[in-house]
Length: 341
Ligand SMILES: [Zn+2]
Image (cartoon, rainbow, N blue to C red; front, side):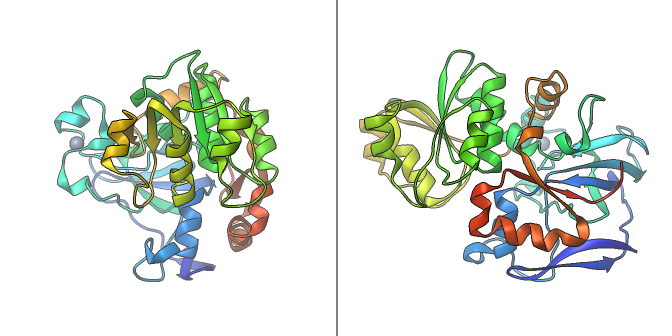
């Protein structure tokens, strides 16, 4: 048996005994070392708008690192003892998009719906195709904070941003901080927008010019357009909230490009897009796992300073109570320490 976090209802997270899963064909059993929650996990924890969970109990977590415990049949890419991290999405490996490297846009219908990876437990099953070995320079905690970097690198590639360009990052949560770090690593000038607490300071430490807000829901447009850097040619929206998406389009310059990472109804009409010649790109995770690991290994991305709290697995409910409450405004990344390295 193993210890595993399970949600029994919204905000009802417990650590229980569960059987250790066995790897099937193409699967790897990973002993989890570190897990770092981000916004989607908090959405799952609260089951916001009933969108994330249809039945309980259910596991939680997505961004993690660990050590390969055992491999199922036909797994040749990793071996027991390897230090690994995992992409968010699985893929077929054979279709035109996979062959061209865009594995996050796999054309195989089997991988069209995002399968829910869970990781907040001592042992987790992972498709071997999702795994990458951690370079020696990349710690387990680094390897558990990869998803936001992968998303941001995908966004910057699609927006064709490079050194000397400017981007506005909406939101300074886990995803926003990762987008700042990834942008700075590429030499992009970053303006970070949002946040009501110490997260704004962390954004500045990562190299962004950061503009906090005084209260949730405050309109950024006046701040940015009148007192700040002005309308933005490129924006990455990291909050996946109605507020964040509205801000992104409000501050977009004519001809600007907006990268979206999630959310609901767009707050503009097709005519608005036409009249301002806006471009909109979707960011469906990313395939930039190796680029992210290289940037961490060479020291260009370092999120260690963003970690403000660590909890053992048995106290994961306390971590989520913090992340789902008002106190989250002063919290950077949280690490759940699940196993010993
Ligand atoms: Zn494919």
